[in-house]
Image 1 (cartoon, rainbow, N blue to C red):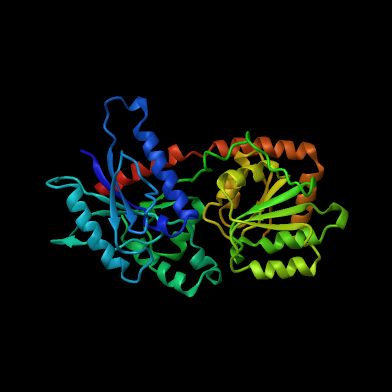
Image 2 (image 1 turned 45 degrees about the vertical axis):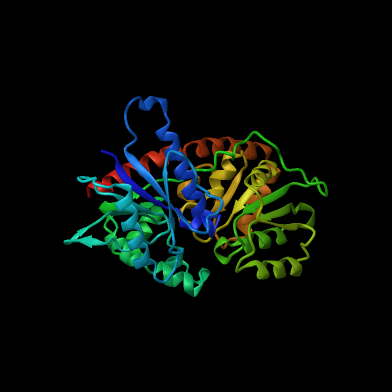
Length: 388
């Protein structure tokens, strides 16, 4: 008998970054698994219902293979814990009329989950939660007061969820270190680059400059530590400085970065590109001499494997999960080591053999991550939770 699974995709109507991309890739990975010819006559073991927001007029996850339902409770609402529980209970009643002997599952992909309703002491559904990172606890100053309030629900979730998915072992260890989570309930499932990030394809070429450029990708917030990249370039001799292209929305560190650029007279070297399409990011990766990702804290660090998949040498930091994700394919530098980052950039730009070796290792490393595998492992977790 198939297990009903509700995939909470409401946040996709509000935010198209991070978690929304995770939901989409997981959903597409499950669709790929379901349609594999190798399945033969074996039924797909889960019956998916996508819970979308009433604001989702574009039907961001519309596909005939999955059921769809509309939720009225906005994500991160102060009454979400109770209101969403009622909505899920009604939805499951419609999705499995008369079905007994199987426990449905709610997949909450945004760190916290609503409280399952109980009937005669038995919880009406099992919960699987994806905890992408613990930045709101590890580096709380990078989050707003409202964000920290909402994510404080992690303590209850860690105690009550039947299964918790983490994208890296470091995130799993953080969860065990900072909450009362049961290690037997945690599963590490690595994420993967978007399939559109490949080494072959259009390469970015600037009309204004043919100089080598360094790329960094991510919102310009304190946690991403973009300022150390600017400081590293400022520490180079003017003749050695590459151009720097920064992709991502302005955030809490944007004003400080602009001041740092002005103070070091780097306005002709550093360019903010804002948010751009996946195709544009891929072309920027392919044209870059290196991708630098000096983040202070990550749960997985997708730009690292995205850049590797595009054949770009990667320089990243020694913090959090980044060494785990990068493996032996990147140069690692302390997140506060300006001179070390400067030297690493100059080495990659100035040594073609080093650069070629990093490209080859990066391609192999990126190929070891797969959304189809992540989807298959997630389906196995849903089945575990249903039986728990």
